Image (cartoon, rainbow, N blue to C red):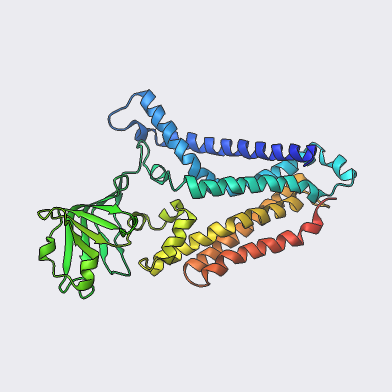
Length: 375
């Protein structure tokens, strides 16, 4: 990598970081002033406590903001770097020396791929670990109480519901588990408990929920042979009314099912897609999220290869016009991608086609525009 390559790479990173700081700072200022009362709370906390909670809240929100704005900001940064090169006439000596424009794009693509790497690490490793902080209301350390959405295990046919979901404690308050007739019990039974705590699978122990002080008691339930493998009493304490119900219904299925998958890692999404306990609607949503994850790096690269020749057109009416055309085309392609995913979401076209057709279209434009770049 030459000195000029390193110069371009540093400039790209500088533009990206300044752009991220500016956009995130604008979001923080607007959101903080609009919701200052939520940070202060009803107990009128001291200013130092409010500032501390605001800093903690927005520090966590930065990870979600990077995942949201990072791909778009990377492409805009590429356009800004080449616009600055033309504005300051730094590109002409290089072109006069016989160095093609796409040679200048090499360090920029290295910078773009480094941003893709950071976004991927953020999505796969960081966001799943701080998901409860991202879901927290303003002024709270972590997400606490969520409304419970009814969920069904499509293998055991157990239906799970409740009044409230405590995410940090992994607990359903006023839990109700409806056991299917014939599959688990011989007559309709709804297990009720003041709380039910979720335990993930570990070793030979399957995933399930521990119902505290459940009613009816285990001895009062007329279980089938299969039911005895899914509903267990506390054998260590004969007087206990606690029950353990084996089911693959997880916390993310019980709240915000439309958006909770974005806080999962790709490995978790694949595991849930392969799990037959998830319903068709949930699997379609997870499949859509998986295709978005797979196509995003390619989309960023192709959008970059479209932005370069449009920003540095061989024949143009000016830099501003070039950037306007580039933004118009990229915006149109983004709209096509959103429309395509919408058609896949309502099952007009397959989800795989809905996700990959925009990528093929963007790649076609990138190849077609390659000959229009300034040399």
